[in-house]
Structure formats: C-alpha cells, structure tokens
Image (cartoon, rainbow, N blue to C red; front, side, top):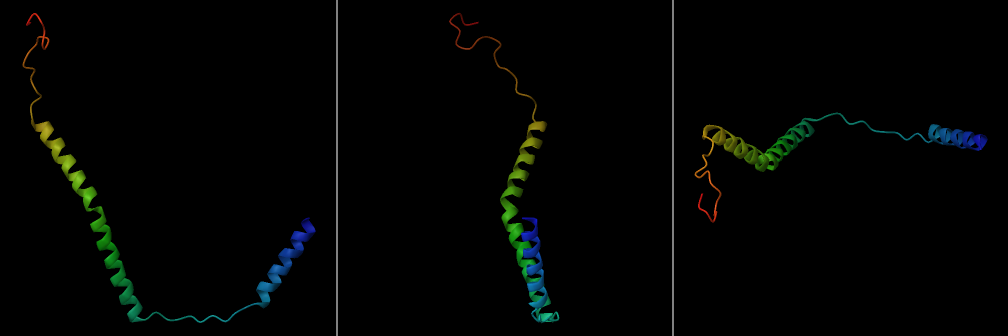
Length: 88
C-alpha cells in the first residue's frame, strides 16, 4: 500500500514537472488602480448603508437608557391590595 502511494506521488510530481505552462504577468496600470479605488469606495458606502439600522437601534437604546436614568423612580400610589373586598 505504501509502495503504491509512493509511485502515485512520484508520477504526479513528474507530470507537474514536465507540464509547465507559460504564464504571462501583466503590469499594473492606472486604469486598474482607479477601478480598484472606485470599487473600494462603493463597498464602503454599501457597508455604511447596511449598518444604518443597527446604528439607529443602538442610538435609540442609548437615548432610552439616558432618559430612564434622568427620571425619578415611579412612586406607588396605594399601599393597599388592589381590588380588595375590604378596601384597605
């Protein structure tokens, strides 16, 4: 089993060694740089638009928290039992 896997590995390496294809490397151009810049701006704008509902919810929660800390705690109007048949 080990011998078979070794032979398959060697055959695979030999195929990769002799199957070299020529590759072409392109230099960066100003058009590609400009396109990259514009796409990054669009992506940032979309992120900001997508996060607006979350920002609104966070702002509303913080406003509620500030309002609750400013209000005095509610006072009980009656110390008796509500709807008591003796009216205490």
